[in-house]
Length: 192
Image (cartoon, rainbow, N blue to C red; front, side, top):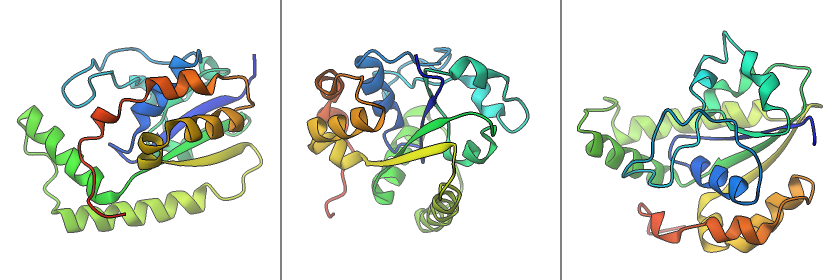
């Protein structure tokens, strides 16, 4: 088993849970705690580990992540400890789709959510992505591949083969692709 840690990251609602499902479907062990249960917005589950949210102050869980896959929200990536080897799969998705999906999730939960207008949120996300892309620049201990959510849904076999190859070729891309559920792509932008 490799000592490398596979990280799935991206903006909220960018397909991180879908990628986690694919890797688990191909036999990769996920580091999760199942505290956040499946719901209407993620009926197949979130695949999260709550302690990851404290990464800035507590990276003790990283030792347990070696050889496994774990989801890390993009603002926390910069707190990954040096001295470990990471394979980072960064999920990308149309910002209008992300904002529409977040709005639906807030509506389903019956909460008000963020007070930011869509335009402000888009600007904030663009700035965040710019910073993350700069951070993901050449690093000796982090290999990065970017996956577009629409491609994952529209061409699951191709994306699965690319991801399996990126991770060393030991995962079955057919098993990864079989997990993809196009019916869960409910907030599709009309252009792109």
